[in-house]
Image (cartoon, rainbow, N blue to C red):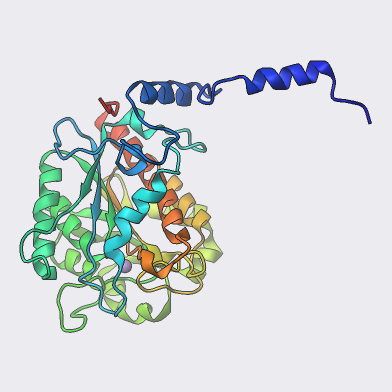
Length: 356
Ligand SMILES: [Mn+2]
């Protein structure tokens, strides 16, 4: 067997001499050298840069375009499986090992927008009462809206989305893209008006979303029987079987046609994923979507006017391997890129994120 030629070895050694962050990709290179200059820790996982995806952690909203917000809440989960209050920290943990750029779409969110990790919501008044917590969230998200800040929210249970819609859809009803095993349009669930099973019914009757500009994707299981309100109010429901038949591209096209040019809210319940890839969710459902399918739906929504997105119902205690939160962090990065790009396109302004 011939030896590797000296010429080839020299070439490999030259390649190996390059700095770790000397990347071929010009945009990525520019971003990572700026991030290094601003003190972002890019390798270590024992950080001084504390935020999700290493975003700067700040509470002040001045000059901010996009805030990542954690909502550690599980009071509105009707079945006896609490745990979603641990979701935000689990996604933060795994986000440190995701990249800060999207290798496939080549979006660099931190170059498009001023992004912060706002941290977690602290419930400070009547904190063990779900309705009081929801009222506080409406007030908190109204502050984001007043400051023209769009949000990526990591839950927490799905009831949180109702509060966000109430705040963001107050002046103009929102279109909604909803990925979930369940329609969440129940009426009076467990004797309660407000729970994570009733959010899109509540948002509809309060006029903050337009059901005719709403699409629900991934529906299946026993939740189907509680979706009568979805059908009757004009929401487009795509059951998992129909999704698999149509494919991602056709479903994405239909979603784009339904939501139109207006402001769109994108909400993902982690039980839209198959239970095999997402055991760490409040109510796992078999026969769901794969990680790639959900990722490709998100990528298919580029260019829409997305004013907020969330990932809800991640419940880390039910997955001792941590892989549910790992997958959730990958999805959260796709959401961050989608939101940053949408903000930059629709505001016509490009702001950089700064750590210093
Ligand atoms: Mn849900």
